[in-house]
Structures are given as structure tokens and as C-alpha cells.
Amino acid sequence: MNLLAVLKEIHQEVTPLLGQGNVAKYIPALAKTDPMQFGMAITLNDGQFYGVGSYEKTFSIQSIAKVFSYTLALRAYQNDLYKRVWREPSGTAFNSLIQLEKEAGIPRNPFINAGAIAVCDSLVTHYSPDKTALNEVITFIHECCGERTITFDQAVSESEMEHGFRNIALANLMKSFGNFENDVHSVIETYFQVCSIAMSAKQLSRSMLYLANNGTDPISRKNFISSPQAKRINSLMLTCGHYDASGDFAFRVGLPGKSGVGGGIVAVVPGKMSIAVYSPALNKYGNSLVGTKALELFTTKTGLSIF
Ligand code: GLN
Image (tube, rainbow, N blue to C red; front, top):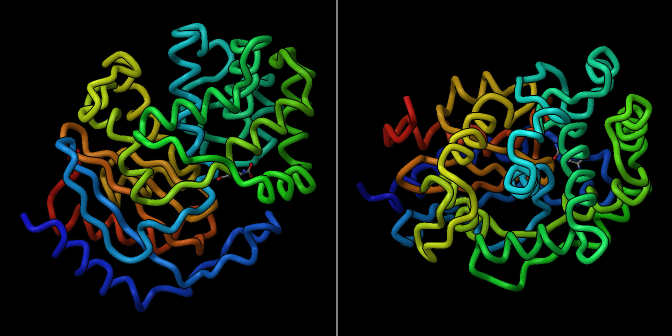
């Protein structure tokens, strides 16, 4: 199969859709992003790479970072992590407070904000006092990607911090229920710094290959997580990776995937490859509108879905 030709075809077909949707305006530093951008990248488990459009443009990976943080937390806490963060789709928006109140401060899953903040809190506990959770997440991404240049965008994290009332509320709510171990302000700061890590579609597709190969990076041969745990992360990406549009994403794309409000989506084809797409205008659920369409076209054209 000529994957580059497939990518070029997709690029052509989605171009008329660019401009639909809205960039994430609730984060002022992201509100200025040009919505017309599109890039798509594929890295195969054997290292072959294909890209179209702005696949080398770095952007804020936002909630895609939750996959890396969760991997580290699952590795550190194993099954004990489920006491703090459950594994069920939420059917609510990524930043919703209502369910957290009803369910006594235990977030439904690690990919909604409450769950990712709890995961961040557990990483802060795990690494202190000698190391910082932020550095450990970044170092982990360096290992996954095979590149040491990736870092976070301070302007984006500061902008989120200034407007992060809802996330601070989620953390405080968990604290009130006893599901929070550290200082709310410092955990939220770490959470925003992790969300503001900047990567390109090319780097993201490379970094997620461990999830396409049972927890072991197929290129460096480094083992990051056990095979059953990799299965679980992929399952959660399929069922919870797109918040209350996770069912629709599974229906249309048929792959484990994780989106971020920066406009990125990564998807995993187990045993074969990882695909990342960037297009910053979002649908009403906070997922890249054109990115979702591009992935839908990809699995429809190639038959490379898990179903
Ligand atoms: N940093 C963003 C937030 O906390 C992440 C949300 C997302 O990408 N869905 O709101």
C-alpha cells in the first residue's frame, strides 16, 4: 500500500473543510492559532515515516500528554492507581465538574481533566522530593521519541494558569473528598506545564509507537510498560480518548486515539503504526474537526482499523 499517496489524497479531501470549527479560545495563548493548518504523520513500527502538510510544525499537545503521564503513573502504581482514577467513559465534557461531585471525587477515567489532574498529583507524590513530575514526563517523552529537544511552552502554561479556574475547581473538589495528596496550586501548575508540551505530528507519531508494539518501542527496543498495561492504555484511548465524543470517534475511525485542544490527535494501529494529525480548529467536543475526518478517511481508505 502506498501510504504517502493515501496521505496526499486525504490532504486534498480535507482541504475544503479547513476553517470549520473553532480554535480553543478559552486558553488565550491558543486563541491566536491559525485554524487553516493541517499536517498528518505516520510512523511505522519498522521506522518508516510518511508525512503531509505541516507535519513538522510544533503545537501544544494538551490532553495528548495525558497518555504519557498515565503510562508513568500506571508503571509506578500498577493496579493501585484505579483506587484514585477509574476506567469508565464519562459521557461528559472533558472539564465537567458534575460527575465528580456525584461520584465522591473519583474521576471516571485518566483522560478527562479531573482524572489527568489526579494522575499528575500521584506523579508529584511518586517523584518528590528528588525529582519533578514535569521533568520526568518530559524525559519519558524524549525516550519515546528518541529526541531530546522537546520541551514545554511557558507562555501557554502561564496563560492556562491565569484562566484555569475550572481545573483548579476540579482539584479542590477532589481535595475535599480526600482524593488529592499535594498542594493544589503546584499540582495544577505541573498539569498545565505538561499540557503545554510542544511537539510536531511527526514527533507524536514516533513517540506513541510503544503503544503499537505491546509497550516496547519497536525501534529502540526499550520496554516502557508491560504488554497488559499497554492493552489497557489502548482500551482507554478507544473508550475515553475523545471525552463525550469517544463513541463517535470509535464509530468513525475504529482506532484507539487521544485528542488535545491544541488540535492534535494521535491514533494507534496495534502491531503496525502510529498516526498523528494536526489541525487546530475543534468540534464542539473539543476534538480536532478536520483531524477526526482525516483519520476517518485513513481507516476507510486503508482498512487499517482494529475492527
Ligand atoms: N489543558 C487543557 C485543559 O486543562 C487540556 C484539555 C484538553 O486538551 N482537552 O483544559
